[in-house]
Length: 99
Image: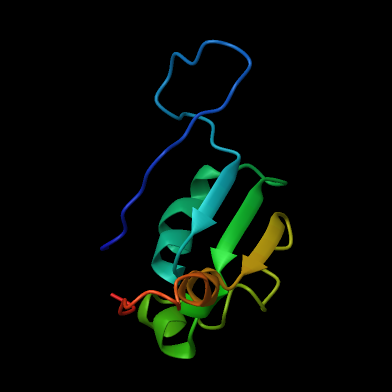
């Protein structure tokens, strides 16, 4: 569905499997959330880029309402962060476009 993913593993022991038990999801958009939320156990951490959760983007992937507001993520530790806004602000002194 146009969703990219990348895994990082942090542990105090040898890691011998390719990410079979994630406990944190960073969803940069609604499509990434929808594609990956099923891999997380209840109580896991979910960090979302709120800048990308527009009405159009939410509806485009099949959500009836924003999962950030409808209670469907109540079983997770949700961390809404305007990541795009923060990035643009941090780089404003450079001559860069949003792309």
